[in-house]
Image (cartoon, rainbow, N blue to C red; front, side, top):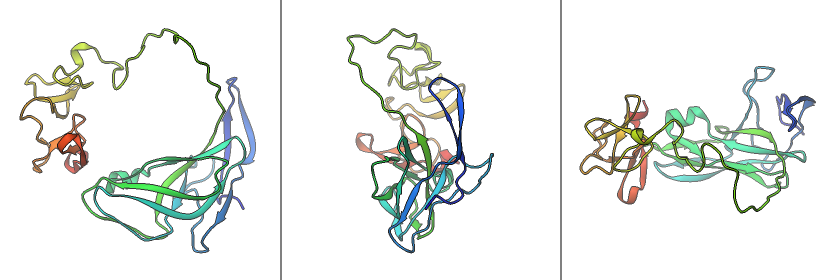
Length: 240
């Protein structure tokens, strides 16, 4: 049995030349529950989707800030050299704050695909059988070999990370060293004038400036945070 509505896959070889694979890559799927819905592509053809949708096989009430493992009722097996990667659906993330915690389905794993979902919104989200819960992409994989060395090759970037690209000392917040510039009044982080949130290292400046929740806001300006920087959820006013 093959994934319905699959499309031809193109692979880029390590030598840089592109070769065409004849026909769709065959994926074996097994229904572990007769009522489980098979995966499918929403759009097919040359301009079709790069990932296919997978569906819930159960009812789940996902309360705010809770996490749940959602069963699909389907087991997969890809050909050797191929694997499946699980990604969030943009609509669920944007409209409800529901995201996946990702995952890789290796060729050797033949158990049920389950999807870990997290509700980062402020309202309970109801999942029913047949609902789209994630998108899955078929990807070619190569086995790596590891060589231990005393030193790595020198590069221009070096060990700079966490938003360091395009930044310099003047564009990094002094109080918290977060990779964003600080406004002239010393209260908020910004990039090219776009306010992202307050500097939580500045005393009494951490209250969310986008809503009236009274909660502290993370330096990125996306999440409300509590004690010990525990994430309480996204600021819905900020993300609108």
